[in-house]
Length: 464
Image (tube, rainbow, N blue to C red; front, side, top):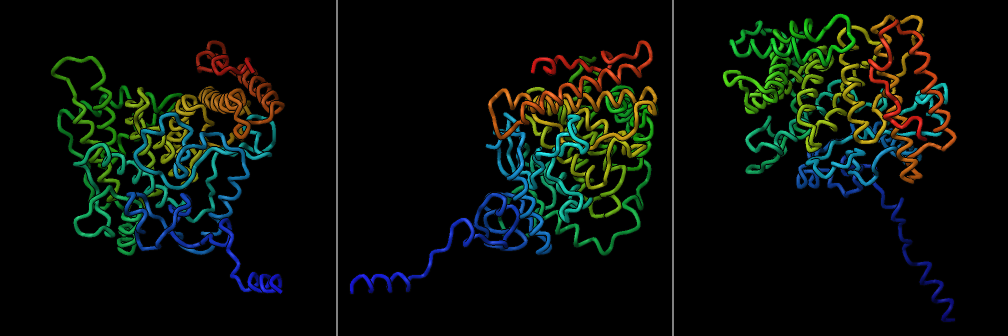
């Protein structure tokens, strides 16, 4: 009798929902969902994001939300090549991640699937080093550029309490915090309906002071050489300067880079440039870009691409101690390029920007022991390339060598979730070395792989 009563009592009890599935919600902001935090769904900025000064991003449609779920599920099934202890919203495989002040939002984490190993020459399809999707509703040109600006603005506000852009409208009176993606996107939507034909309307050619003219000349003769490497048309020292004279944001970015570079050089006292001058131009760039992003045409412009890579070069100069934010800002430049479908074969300035970015990412990836972010693969045969194109192909092979180094380092460190199978590493090594030998045979006398920095023994290609 007692047993029957116990059975009936159990049947009347309400079944407990599973913590893993029954309590999972498909609403709330993407930031809270990615961090597995409860969201109060307050708009435009939810409570948890307000408290933690995080970027609050809501999906536009249910289908977009579903695509994010599927992307997250797929990413868990892949083999990641990075430090999995990093913040989920950042995913930087970087020993300096403790210095990062804010989250960076959408996951652009290098990843590896079982079939995606042809970046190392093993399969016909390129290795996917990013979970970015060209079809994602969240990676339009305006969102990618706004996201990049948000990274820079938040870090600038963290470093200098006196710096600020337009405050978020969601803040209550008396509250203060760095600008976030919600405020910037809200502002963009407010002016979208009244956009003129071009953000250039009413902009007159710049009038430079004597000192600014010196800085511009310094950029053309010194700094632009880094960006124009192997490019026969030298677009940064010619075409970009012409663009800058009609685009204040690009001009201030150039002046910031030139001033920062000059400040690091031994020079006569009358030519001394302080860090404050370069920072001032840097802040002017951010303010201008924020205004220009109100225009859709600017988010797809050459001026924005050039500004982003020049700013990245400016930040790179401060990265020698590894304490800056340049390495993660490189991802922001990557987002902008992907949103515009820019790659190493785009032609013109867009192509030049991509190669300049890849060289920077190669250095950052090698230091961080991670694969490069790009997954673009050249399609032209070596026989179709001139000497300048062959030099760029050598840079591309160097990026493959860095990818191999990242894989092999993960294998040696014993991280079973962050490496290829040993047999794939062996095949990848042979493939890269064969491609290097093939490339060498196409160079004319005196233009060798040593001149291009393809000293792959430094990347331990022959060790593993």
